[in-house]
Image (cartoon, rainbow, N blue to C red; front, side, top):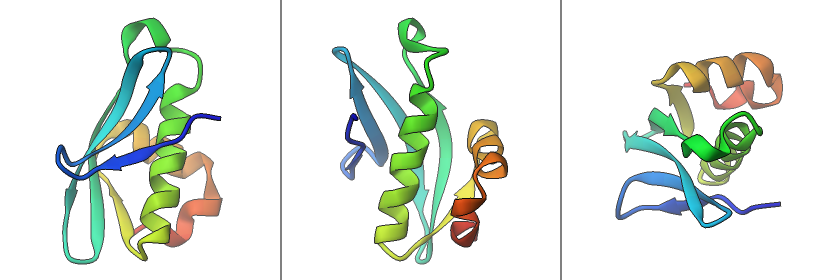
Length: 90
């Protein structure tokens, strides 16, 4: 299992996979994290890596006691399929 990290300097969650980095850009508000864009390197697409990235990001957001605002379609779809994260939707 790969480990998602919060790169605060770049305002993005990152997941290293096979020498490449999938990432989710975000903006912070006082109570929420707005995920604005997710990107998986082309060679890694279709393998569930973006879902793994978003899951890890949501777990980090939950651990920080914040809410999430889905600012990109992928996160909207992910949240729709994963009701276990419904408590995070701000």
